[in-house]
Length: 125
Image (cartoon, rainbow, N blue to C red; front, top):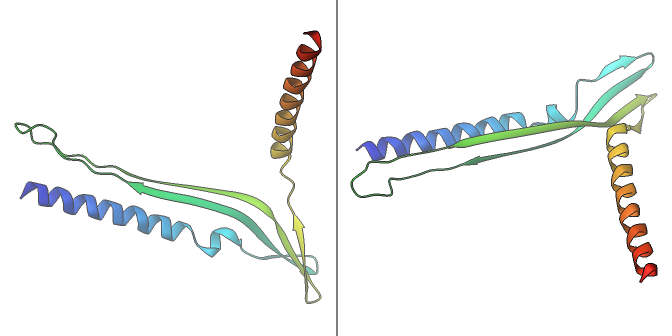
């Protein structure tokens, strides 16, 4: 009987996690509330990604009662730009992620440094 209660609680916890994920990943998270800026209407846009997961468990020894469970959810939202609507025409204006550009430059610099080192070592031998 206790195992049935644990299974029911575990199932409910997974259902709650999935419901939370579904509620969080809506179009309202992607398209922000539009606002006026002068004669233009601005509609902010974001990239939204998320996920949910669950677990379970049982006792692993005949003389011990065991149980277990786990669930989780993660969500990330990043601005990607805005739609500017003016005189009935929408224009896309992307956001510039300076941090991402800097990280990309650092990775590229690291790759170049490794390549130069390998070329110099090859010439030495």
